[in-house]
Length: 468
Ligand code: FAD
Image 1 (tube, protein in one colour):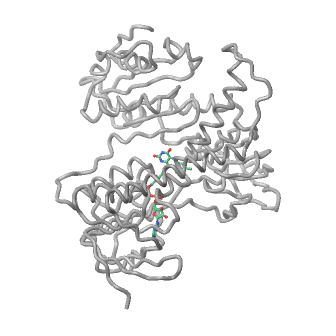
Image 2: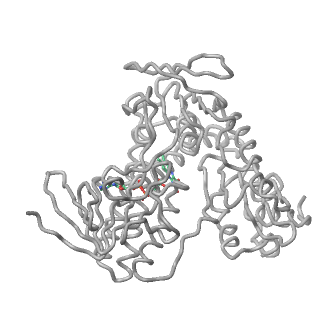
Image 3: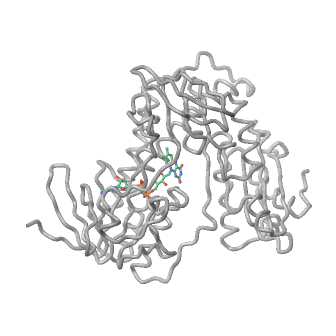
């Protein structure tokens, strides 16, 4: 019979949750085996998510800048054009730098990569089936489930990755589409839709709900909707996809708005209507593993499942499906296993949309604070009043704070504008310390920087912005 290997910790899945948990556990002196069936480590994020999408967003944004904005700087560019294979090769190379980086960190931390498909069995044993059919068994004193998530399919638009694309196909379309229909106006749809629009495709986003980016602060959504439409993104909100005819060379997407049926003819369709927990190697019923209503693994604030010694982290636990959330949960699980008294809290997990301008948010939206009955104040400052933004020619958007009226504590912050993904960090840090708008408002910010917009928005919540 196959040998039974053992380790202090067996991690199932090598994405941002699993690989970070593995490294942290190894740092704490535990022996770690990480089971991953993909050819490379890094999971969705590194292979077919965050990293390749950001590589293409960067390339396509350079192109758009050259076409639309170089001239106003007095730079003449004649005949800028796209070399898609080179752009894609660069993306692949960026991904490889990251997957190899994770592999290097595994070696450095003496983490065993058990290559193959893992199945969780009773007694904290993971059966690993390698590509060549070889089977091995790994028993962990603790097991961390980090199997991530997979895209949700629509029954009449099954992924073939030729014409009907998930994120995987949409990151490597072999040509610039003439017309790309994006079903679902969330982060992934808007980011990948923006990439192909910038490269020359007509892009139509179909969203069932009344707005794109549901769940975000109303002001932010309104501004983003306005800007994206102006950029040429066709946005159909309140529109239901009712069916589709898939052909060799395209797709007819049937839609319905206010009871009126029509259709969109596309050469490619990206379905980005959400993601669900990946539990292929886990049989919750047989194991007695407690699951939530949305098929997510239930955990407490130490990432413990209801099974002794079994933890779960990242997308498979639901909540915000974000790499940095998976990573933090991975750190918590590893530290709890090593005996540290730590707890996960989700209050200050930021969320970014990497369109241009970018969107960045943390904490509660204004409507959430209002609904809670808490008395609050809003501070807002536009990038059009910021000197650095003017030098950059990037004056769209604003920074908005929602703060407690009496204590001035920051409850939420919502930004749309240039580089706001990076500007948000100081607000997240302030919120970690339960900081106030005044804390940020009286902190010296270098001049001229975009970050002065954050300071001024905080001052505006106190009724004393200087430059407005
Ligand atoms: P995953 O990254 O999904 O990793 C799970 C791993 O487990 C996979 O490698 C899988 O192969 C492996 N696995 C699953 N089952 C088994 C099994 N039975 N045996 C062996 N191995 C198994 N998040 C951000 O924070 N920022 C972004 O900019 C961002 N951009 C994104 C763009 C796109 C297009 C997509 C799709 C997602 C994006 N995300 C982004 C979300 C981010 O990718 C996920 O939140 C993150 O990858 C979750 O990490 P995870 O470790 O929980 O799961």
